Image 1 (tube, rainbow, N blue to C red):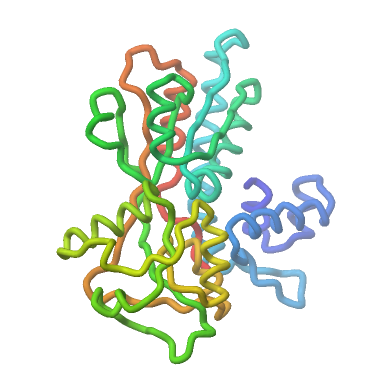
Image 2 (cartoon, one colour):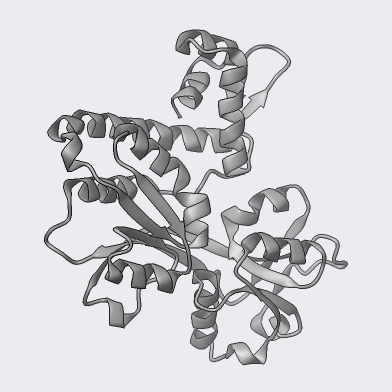
Length: 301
């Protein structure tokens, strides 16, 4: 992130490399890794040496600066710890949180606490809740709110809210630009597995509008969001995922968004940890770090 901010500041890979005492290929590689992670271009590369930020780059820059300030606070706080007080932290996360939302923030936290070992386990939301209760996880991040039976023992905190969108292959002709629930019943649906955040939000949405999932033609359920996208791409049906996960394909003309007349669905992500009095200082710092980090959606394409 430090490399990204320096490139944004001087508007040049060459000048950033000189300022950071790195080679230009090393700087370019760091930027490429960020662009691959967020699946979007962060800089507009002109023929001259000068470059400028894209819209998504501007968005990331704003939050990266806040992240670096938070890093400095944590680094200063390291003086309170000796090696004996640091320990492993185990984080449980749902697929979307673990693969899309947490990697950058956890990497920054590791920079502040190099002696602490962070282990990230990606699993189903229900297994994150059970893992927290069993003591297998110290902190959880899920796209699903804990059920009432967990509320006595687990504390929840909303981190962010993102829109869910319906999408289909752009190969479909004519394209479906807008529909209501009645028309949705005529489509083949490819859904996330039962118990996932996306699936639960859709089921609750149907209940709100006096419908049941059994009224719809669900042709496939998958734990893999990548598999869902491939099936939609090949024209097997339509699906529902967080907007930031398909915006790149929509921009490239691979997918087409379908607007639902009733409402736009939203999905929330939660930070979860046990209600207990003996949270370690390191746990408290990680909770504060994660709480402060993802205040907005991932960068726009």
